[in-house]
Length: 469
Image 1: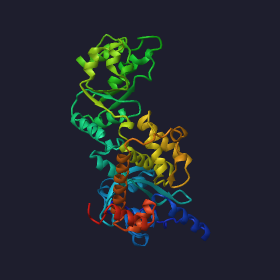
Image 2 (image 1 turned 180 degrees about the horizontal axis):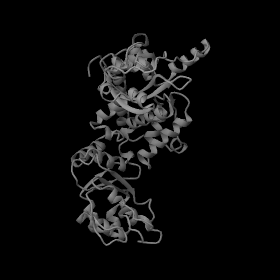
Image 3 (image 1 turned 90 degrees about the horizontal axis):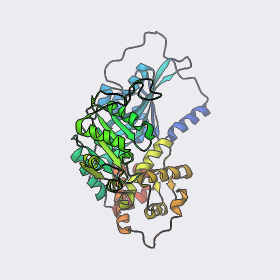
Image 4 (image 1 turned 30 degrees about the horizontal axis):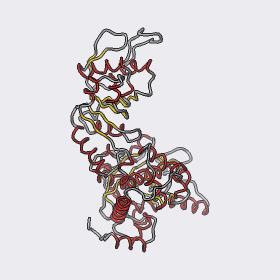
């Protein structure tokens, strides 16, 4: 990813340092490690010429190491990033690593590939920079899921293709480019803050602050001060002026999670902000004007809270301008395969694993479980399974005990829909890997963790043919 312009030569006249010699066994051992890594590894000299290229880098780019050794980095990637903000150049010029730069390029088969790039300088025994090292992690699968949902990068953690989620996406699209107050409703763990962040990042305020406050996590005694700030001497311990969350969010978006937990005194001040766009710090007589977009969320029935006298009706109507209700996971189980794949990708990256999926028995256990904790509980269950599992396939006994011990119903609800969802997901997964491999069955089969014969049978079953997409 080096730039195409000429590079300044070092002032020193010394010959470039080389790596310390190693015994043949040590060299073979190091090569074995590099070839086994699930990330692409590329080393370069100070002229940005490639000196080594591991197997995963070959799979990602489509080029063999024998071809590219000696090429300059930008000759391989030909990405706009090479001209604009090359990760390896930044690492070498600053003598500091560069982490998780997202880069798009066309591989040998002219398929668009998205990778996360890490770059770091390579030094000799005397500490002199002798080149650089880049690692590439293929995140094209995640990028594909983003495109499937039809949303930008900032929607990447909201996963689902069910009709219930399509309704959520539709309402988000309607409101994100306005300043309308939004009330996000849903059970705990359904992803209310993710929706709030996505609305902010797709609004005209995206470059301004997003400030999130969990109203249930702050003690009543300090909640008002946290939200609105205070002046010095307002109460015992107020030794200096404090800026509140409303001021922090000025020009941007304030997200009040668990808004149903607000005490009456704070509800009054919040109502005034929504009506007049101004408030007072605790202990101050001056009014401060603020320009914010308010998003709120709750897992409570605010109508019932009004009837019980715990929530102001006038505040409710100020908040309930544009409600978005998130479905619980038990009502969109057709999204389970996509969610499971999303979390497998996440934990493969975090833990350096190569888990490729769940066994049929494990998936049945997930489908039969009611998910009271929703998507958050599913994420925790997959993480638990990663810790327990040892192979490339998660088995049912790797899942948390309370999930596998859940009494299975005589007939799993929506079994036909479940099978259709899993078949649709498998077909899309195979097609994506075939396209990324340039329809080379052996390469796609290796990435999918199945034999070429099995892949051929599944291609016939799903009628997958080259260039049909």
